[in-house]
Length: 277
Image (cartoon, rainbow, N blue to C red; front, side):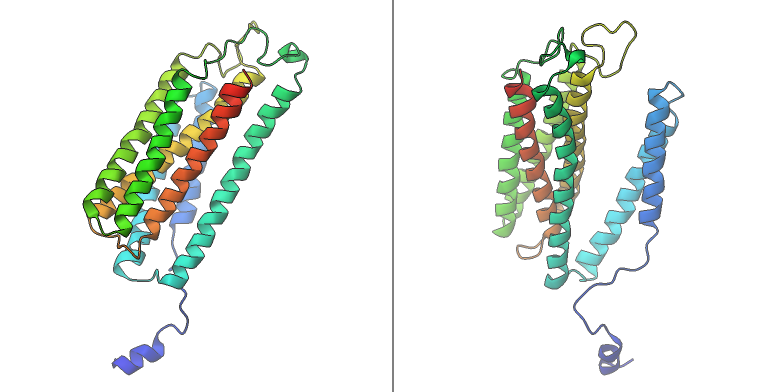
């Protein structure tokens, strides 16, 4: 086929129409398995399905990211018009995540600002010993805010063509994200209140405080883990030279997500740890 014929048969628009992919369907099945496995685990029905579902999710992430990286880096489909649409999509995704956290804050504010009989008409509820805000939570806040600085440094270095600075900034951000997760796990292990409802209804055994606390901070922790995975992928892509100073939307999307995680934590620290004590 001549060059003229290839141009004639090529696309007549700047948009990229993705090829049919099995990964959305397979990913939804993997997520369903993980959710069902979590429910069975919480009801003491066995743990085998949960790791199977999580493993399936990881495998889908690997092959799906592989396809997107191939489209962006090697096939050149992510032109400026396509990237503009992806930016709108990422912004809408983060907006949906904001509303997701609004639900947890709404539940927390309702219990905090309008205490009821079950809490002894006070907040925190009678008998619940909460965390000291300026202890471990404040340290975690500093860790996460510092990670926001390092990811911004990495982004600036990438735009300036400084590959070494990009890699160092990303590595520090990944380490700080992992450190935040480890500190939060340590904090959870020392909580005086329990997520699960237990027989006896003693103070701290389940109830609205522990439910709203663990749901809000736990889902944020899950987002930190997901964001850390995003940044790990970006680190290896930067190492392999996939990003260019004027073409690195994959990194930008990860940085946007990480800054969103930072801002959500600030609200959690202010309202869940500090203001409501």
